Length: 479
Image (cartoon, rainbow, N blue to C red):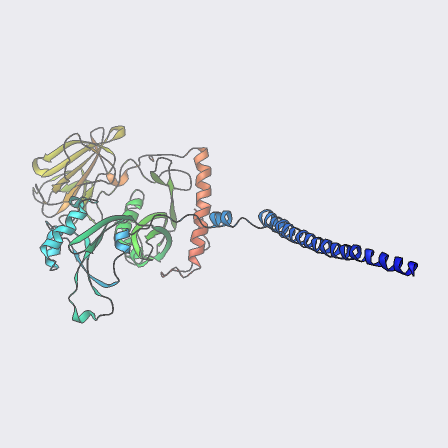
């Protein structure tokens, strides 16, 4: 019995100890589980952070620099042409009518003719004066007057309000005056981007060089320059024959709207006369000037021009003749060129005016002193160019006056004399040296220039060129 009781007492004593151990192990397991959860959470967060860092570093080192690429491929835009005031205007429909300034005309008078309200016209002109001096406008200047009406409405139901005007004072510039609000305007001066294009005139001469050049698309002013270029070597009254050939490479300047903005320059010109070919190339210089040279590097320009008037007919030659008014025979010391009254007369060469005014039977008369002992005289003129006086310096080709019939003359013509050390010389027999000869280095540049021009001519000769062109001859590009 004692042994059984002892056993039972031992069992009762062990029971609380086992319960304490049981509850202690549960608490430990819970704590361990929480520790494991926190460890897993820390590991997950650390892994995400490390992964994000690695991803950012890889993209920064391996991906292209987008900002830098955009900057190099597309530079920052320039300032807008239109002001913020104009950009903010409500959409309107616009139309314009054109008018031109007449002799003694003003821009204010032009706006009045266009039925512009005087108050609005004054406000617009006030803004214009902030960017442009209206005194620079010349007769013939074209002006576009704009009117506007609400978008979406029929023009026929609206007279339209005055919206401003614009004009192009020089080919490289446009002046714009625009309405911004009720009787408020703004004015801007905008540069026009002009580009050169080359054109080729290649024509057979049937009647005259002028007609042949015009048929090749050349403007009248450029044709006059062409005739002046050949006037040093060609006598247009005697030498030109039907079947002679004219070849000219010239430029025109176009604006951003693909419209002709200005006539350009003669780049190359060749005239085949009686089987002999005269070819000249335009060569620019470092100072911005240019000259035309032949294949040997001699300038086309000579000390004096043989014919100082365009489109004239030789009416009297140098030498002994019977005077048409006085009736007796005497030496005719120059050449007479019959031309309409008012035809421009050019200085035959660079020089200084020695005499200007009325001079006996010569009527209105100019005498110019040149280099190397040469002088030229111009008689029976109708008028003198403005601001010319004795002692004035003139350049070759400068207009010095116009053809008339002052003095002892039967009709409008120019009497032209050339004197060498005060002795009369026949202008048709002048053999003066060229103004300039190229050195060896410049000759090399001319050779490259000729090759470049020949390539342009060949390209235009086989293309449409928007002009009529004759088939090229094999010798066309040879000097």
